[in-house]
Image: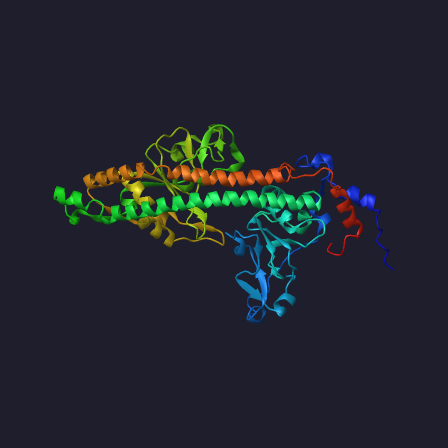
Length: 467
């Protein structure tokens, strides 16, 4: 005969549910409590019906969400993904039908996509979903998870890719304020984000206008239209124009896979893709270094970046064209070339002419036509880049094209400042979320009943059956 499971008193359950002082991430107001997600909700995994069984998918009416559906997704609520499954598919898989207001968290590849179910739906196994609870507002948990990517990854494990298990998700620390304070926090976040989004939209419009204008001018440059008058004045015909592969006019070097375990805060800086984002060299963006004592001199010599090199990133987000950025190195001191970055050293071509071509849609359209990779990561091979053709004008015409482009774009150099403003807005959002979950948005009312009572209610079972 099976033994009855011992039911602990609420006080003992409460003691177990509270995060010890030594493990608290931040100090929060006195009427908040630090607990763990598994104490305030039920966490559900997902599943995938076998794709070979047509009956599990054909004419399905149950929304089925995968992490791919949340890639680039900006809305808070989601009602459906790209695929539905049938009742039979649901029954024959580990997927569970989740109620409206369930908070969905992608738990692998990648960790950290978040959305709230706008209606009943289910997910694949790439999610840990948090059922509605009387302890928290769905949007409060949504914003907390959005702000906690690093914390979630710290609880994850795996070799091929990190995955957050249901057991680990249950012990993630969670700052719990009174419900009224949760609503005020959500309202304040949404109000501040709305203002920032409006500012970001205006900046993006200005940046898009610049980028469209730049693309049109570069098209004229490399189709010969920009210097048509110059050719007439100098008696030069289009017959002097020819096409060559990039490999014929530059020296190629691929980067090296430096061991991240050896990265430190001093030494030679390793240039990674983030340092070249949006076509701008930014040595302050998450810099990493490696001591010359840890690598062979031949490696340093072979992968040192030199003044006049053009660096090209080869990896980014698939379908988003957020890589293939070309950056000219004007000063180089103790910089090393990391993997998935290509170094081009111009040999029989004007350096800035090549740089402008790599920034044009003539190049980028061909570059991305060979994009490969998985669900989220896009790649273009260095071997393919070598074969891409570039229009070669005479050396004099190349210099004239560069002179005209320099003159035009000098007036529009504030575009980089616009990119910085967008980055700053994103940083401001992160700062707002961090302050929100420390109780620093100026919304807390210390006279309100402590969230301790909320936690007691759910632990005792008197708060309802959502648990």
